[in-house]
Amino acid sequence: MGKFMQALVGQWRRWALALSCGLALTPMPTAASLAANGPDGTIRLFVVQQPLSSLFETLGTLAGVGVQVDPAIDRTAIQINLHGRHFEVFQQLSRHYNLFYWFDGSRYSIHLPTQLARWALPVDRVADDYVNSVIKYTAPYISSDSISFNKELRIVNITGPRELKEMMEKNLANYTREDKESVAIIKFGVSNR
Image (cartoon, rainbow, N blue to C red):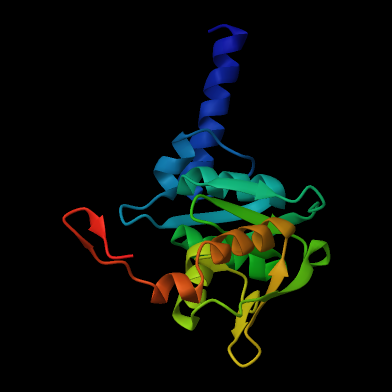
């Protein structure tokens, strides 16, 4: 057997050992997703030692979602056991390392708490039920206490990255109380207005 084949077989044996033990020593190829994704969509992963940014990217690959990791995150995950659906695993890992996480429906955004800002968005002309719907739509999975709605002051408090604030503003701007209460009845293509 040539040197190339010996190296290839040796690499395959290391991957097979890592998969059989459930270890994630380095980001592995797609074969790792077969072992890590259960039939019900759960992820089970035991990490010996891996940079957090690389681990989040690996988890994103296993979950089939995009991941944006703040470049300032330079810590290493050491001996951590992760198990659950993708949002539970991201939540476990983020809480364990005190990181902010936010899932917008297509990708996770991971940040250090020191990189976040606070905003108060006035929502004077927006109905309460719509504000709550926009919060759930904009951030279905997010670090606890990152978004709250104060009904008395008519303010949405946000702690997060600028992109979260901008997305929330955009989604809230698409709807006002007058829009909801103004209904046009159209009969046979003719408006009554």
